[in-house]
Length: 136
Image (cartoon, rainbow, N blue to C red; front, side, top):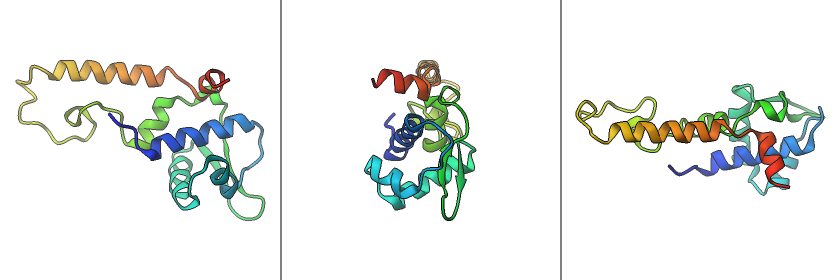
């Protein structure tokens, strides 16, 4: 499993919001500059986060984005699943994967399923608040 730039940048942005704290909306341009992410690419990430209810968005003068829950309420797993479409180690175990003709007789499938569970448990066990603590 390789996490794409979209997943990594979404995590960086969510941590950035948590570091700022408060209820103020942060303009997209300010986030892009602070994180060194192109504003155009960040727009697509913020749209994904906003549509999923991870952040609040206000358009126009004085607008921007902010977290709508405390940092403890966001897991790394939930953010990666949203931005990556899943966090499976191999394609045959991912959600929506085309059925493999060897699923019933595959001796390795139980191993891949266990690995997926380990990955999921790992990422679901880390919150944005944990990343803030670990980063200090």
